[in-house]
Length: 288
Image (cartoon, rainbow, N blue to C red):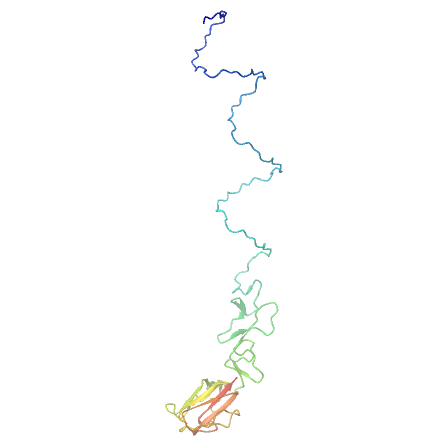
């Protein structure tokens, strides 16, 4: 169509030629914007696309403590069970050395051994010579532990065979056992003449003698005589303790006698010994 509008008398447009794309979008038919002009600074920050904070407001006091500058714990996480036991409120363990051998802490802190004692295996004892044993005193010491004296348990009447084992009145300690006092009965006149066993042999390879001739047994034990009684008839002696179980035997090759009471029971061969203990004779000593 022919342009019948007024003639454009404005200045000539000397700007650069508009080479941009043509606006091919739809025409803006919305209402005219009549609001105030926005004169604030242009917002050049990134757009906030995160979710809105809907949590409660923190109203607690401000933390004014010192900053933790210690090293970071890089060890493995503790996955063990929680300790639910009672708290230990006892005194701190300060230790006191070797309680097994320290005589100032023997068996426990502060347990001091008495003078002359050593600490062995946690006990205060005397360092006794071989053949002796350290026994505790009958009256406990004051202010220290131990105080034992060395005892020979084979002969000590107050500690016979064991510490504190006293022999009854009238008995003595011999070879660690309580027994009647030693009595010399020929031909067995000293404690060393006796031996232990249960058999007395005679004749044959032994000859005109008893082997052993001095025998020690306990109450309730039996003794067997072995040999030819026809050539060596056995007879009990009238000496020694009354009530001997040894009976006169003139035949056979074995005879056994049981002793039910303590004492000394001598015997002899009617052909080669005597009632007094001469020649082929012997003694059975019976102890409790």
